Length: 261
Image (cartoon, rainbow, N blue to C red):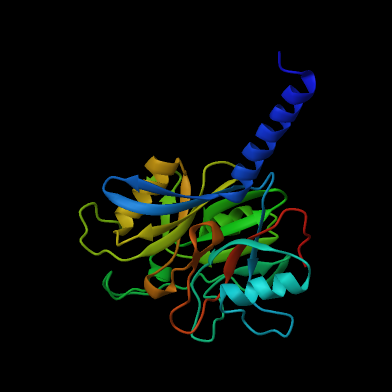
């Protein structure tokens, strides 16, 4: 007969293993309709999602390593990172940027004209905002964000929107042959956030369909593509070096129990 002490130790060990596994491995590989992705999912009920841009001296971090070093100096630990929206050559955000409740860059509602190929991705309307605040997160088209004004502690604007209330962006072409590496963010509930980076090249339509039909996201936002897409995921051995000299905004998950500063 197994003693009560042995049974309790076994149960405790199992709980420790299961909880440790869930905490240690937020990222996974997924395939959908012939394309491959890395998905990193978090729940704001337990995960500390933030957005970073500049260090204490006002200089853009530019790399995941610099963000990690800055957090480490404050006794904090970087668990995950991804480039967090479009930016100019000086690494200034292309649109709205809020960090720790402070609006550091204003919302961009400008419109560009021309053929679809001539219009930069950010201006393929509607673009949108990924925001975090009060224990929940959301992705909203820019105009809806301005109308609703959620209480955002962190926010970053990018574009185009991929999925808008379960509908695909109206400019996306089902059989488009224009494919690139891409990354984005979607929400499948008030606290459930999914960050995705492609393995290989996909079209906007294919990327949007994965968010909606593969991950159940009613709203999703394109963050960037090509050399501007990057991922920090230690469990996958990923610490991508940025193209173009660095990233602008950087979305992170910081080890549980550390306060934003």
